[in-house]
Length: 77
Image 1: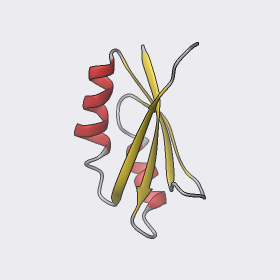
Image 2: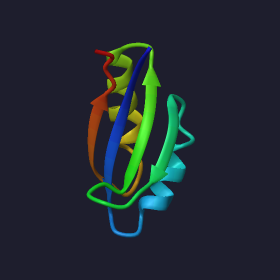
Image 3: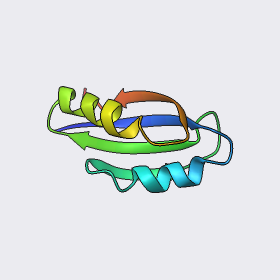
């Protein structure tokens, strides 16, 4: 299992609706709107890194109102 944090910037006023929509996507553990340089932070999981990439590109990035994402895979060192 691969997990990652996805940091999301949105259009002005869209953070809440983006977080709500992303929270319903299969593979998303948690999605919350926050303050700071990013508007939404998502915790997601998938079976493989490739599956995680598909989740981000095919599902998360397609949500209306997103302007930029940064995916940060979780590592156990």
